[in-house]
Length: 147
Image 1 (cartoon, rainbow, N blue to C red):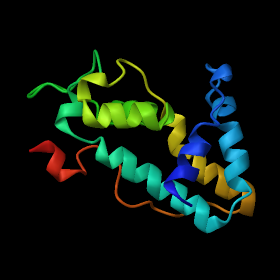
Image 2: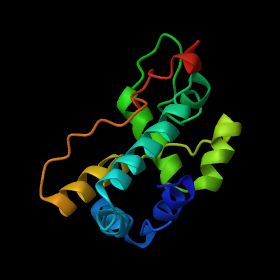
Image 3: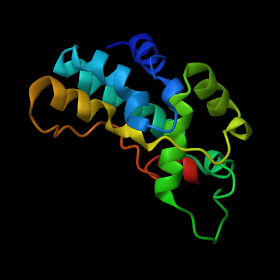
Image 4: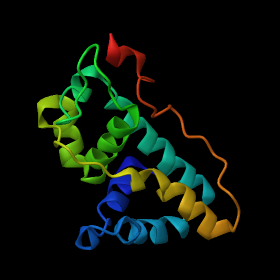
């Protein structure tokens, strides 16, 4: 799987079904499930890499009402899901936000993007998805982004 293929899959998200996240991701899951298990894992790795890259204090400080503020409670899960929304909205927004954290969309999330690879894998194989993508996309895992 190339990065171009990854972004082509992301472009298949059905935003006409907003409000039903399963329906939004369904076209991507369906297409990805027709690919090899290696491609499914590569999709997951590319997604993890994009999420990891956005895992910085500068980006966390721009997510809206629940933005990172030194010394205050900060939801690491909400920040992860907010980063998912950036990736889910395509390469143009991703690179805009990457280069200018102030472009981060405010107060939105798209947690369902995290389940696309596992759902596609399970649909393809009938087996549980046990793959752990690299690098870690968990909040604070990008050590260089939080100093």
